Image (cartoon, rainbow, N blue to C red; front, side):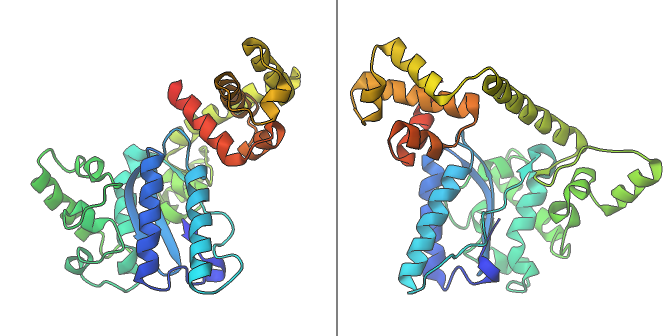
Length: 309
């Protein structure tokens, strides 16, 4: 979810929305991601997508930095365009994929821009028209959504249309937008029920899923953090990793830090960047400062190493 600062307009017209989508599409294809649903409103954006190996931070940073510069330059303004950092929520695909697709694509209906579902299929600023086969977005994965409605495409589209029609009067859906406990239990009524029973459930504001899903994600995250903490405690540092990798390739740290593009040096730099991120949890900017290169070089190196692995 991306919002304009102080709810300000981030799309002054159709040209801005088209430019935003073009840039989004390029980055999604480049990052090997999959977009399942999207909606552009005048002052905010909703995206539902499966991230690639890089996660979403790199894509969102590139998208929002580029677009803010474009918008300010085009509309002769200065300063921040977006409200702090974008908001992201990790979702349980099995339980919430279709609910989120519908909720996102019905944004124009809740805003009063569209009043009939028949009109939404001609509205150009959501992914609904793509799932309905009325428009094509090379960067949007409609097949994953339609597969939930049937094997034959035309039948699946008809069933999806019925599903959307059933949601026209839903309005605000608390379990999709409420706090972590509401999300984990599937609604406020379930929260009250659990309270009466004296039962507890794992919750987290950053995760949309039931208690078991939240617990599994938290456990995975904690295991990664504990591994990184253990390495920190035994004294593993970026300097130590750098010396290890340079030693293996018989190159000097000085040559590495002076931007040499020799194949052995590039390979060492790529491995060091990957290990520092994976083992120590260091951000690309910190790794880049230590190695004397720019952040984008480190980001690309990590991506290449992940693809090799």
